[in-house]
Image 1 (cartoon, one colour):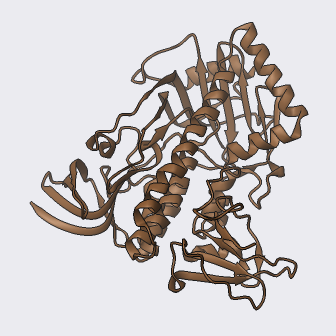
Image 2 (cartoon, rainbow, N blue to C red):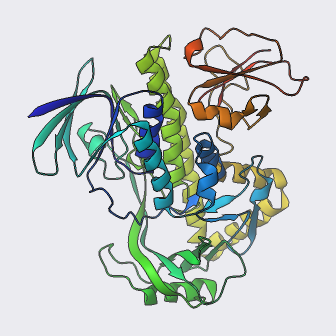
Image 3 (cartoon, one colour):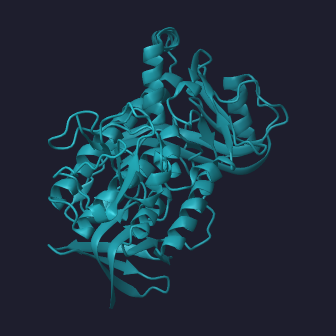
Length: 471
């Protein structure tokens, strides 16, 4: 059995693992990414939408504008035929939902990770792990069946709902199945829908339809009258039938390039950190596809964890353990919120009794009539409204999302592409870093307000949240 060493070992090369590995390697950290699938295997998976906050995170990595060319942007969404969400009101340059296949996100993230120097091990499976005070040893099986022990200072499991890392850590994954026998398909349509983004529930059936922008549409459907195992075959005729029941038409669906059947669980690991091992993405939480928040939440997990691991490995933080623990305290509540919001959407879609349908109608009318409530719903769905507790010794706006700002040196999210903290100050000011800041001047980007009315200094974390602001 041979032994190889790396700073961080990431298990799972989906979007979450690729973003995390790319961030760490860009910061000069030695990273090895292990994936059980062979390289190049198509990944036609459920994720189809990239929300505003995720696009901001991708903008901070120089990828958002290119990703926008791969799909179509939607500024409005209609749910249940009654609730209209106007995403153009979101306070961001990405005031829309991008509909694009998950493999397009993975393609860009993989390219970035390769360029940054990540070491990839495809066709390699995790069999177990053990920890000590100095690191983690992963027991792996290589493509030819040979055993390999890979030693790392930290390990992150981004290996999905059936996470081998979570199992090896002995963590439970409590929750339950919410909905069975959902069908998904990518199809072409003979007739274009009037609404670009549609979710309709009609008691015993619901359907979702959204365009990728290249002539392909993602359709998702469910009917109470056909509840079968995931292994049961599914064909285009079944998809068409569900669409006709829910939408009134199948829009002439044809030429399906991909069809699948699955069930949806709501589960969350109680801990995202066990010693020197972490969980992120579907390995940590899984929920209904309603709202399209799954991949987005995982990518934002990765953005939160990557800079904290970097600071700990560089020795730049006064309390590395507390900083790494903050991954759990910040991201676990977000995962729980996504479980609630996505669960609420799917339960509304499944409403079939007179009472539940009346409640759905009432909720839609309320959100349409009360702009603050509608704005809060959009902030939650898009991720723009996510915020964290203030840093120790810091008040608000510490912990809040930093909106993109035009600075003398460029846009804030362009400066964040360096993967470092950004200290913004008035012209001529040289504020000192707060003692609690997990960064040194060596890895700090300094910037200047263009607005002379702004007198405060603001320290922005690499994930685009405010760490500290002066009075």
